[in-house]
Length: 196
Ligand code: AMP
Figure 1 (tube, protein in one colour):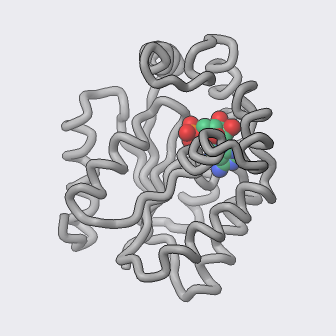
Figure 2 (figure 1 turned 90 degrees about the vertical axis):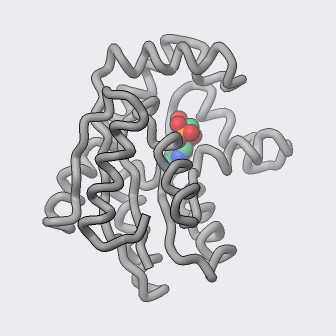
Figure 3 (figure 1 turned 60 degrees about the vertical axis):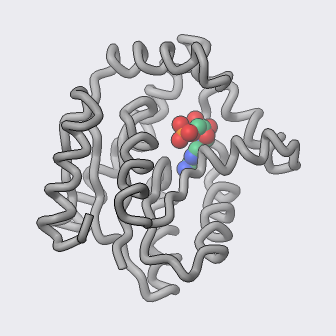
């Protein structure tokens, strides 16, 4: 079983790369952002709560997000492994993920961090906002707030995972074309004898 955390700021390409890995390998892709958006579409109570944070570019509270992730994991217990996209985003979430994985006798196999400059992120997100239908991609102020939240609360996880996983934390240049980035990810997975 392989459990991969795809890490990076909003707009760094986590979702795009996750889909490519899933197509080639069949891991289960868990994107907390996607699950929140599905709840918003279905107008659930969770969706309404999540929306009040997402529209401002803020994080949904930790406990809400951790509970969501936990139930997603429970609902896919037969998986060959998971790709976590957009989770964890805080130290508390990372600590809780460790406990959740421990309880299931699983662990995080590797973390791949996509590095992209702020100017490029803003450009990509505004561009995505033209047809994604995502409210949080339309407003430059909200976009910059999301990047700031990443810098303040999430980027510290690079240190957390590089210390915890030692040889299984990889930082790659995400400011290139999709295929070149995917090719680097494949090399990392192959090195770990993951057939992809
Ligand atoms: P994403 O699709 O990953 O860019 O997430 C979109 C939005 O969903 C974020 O800006 C947050 O408001 C919320 N969200 C997604 N994942 C998390 C998380 N792990 N913790 C808190 N909020 C999250």
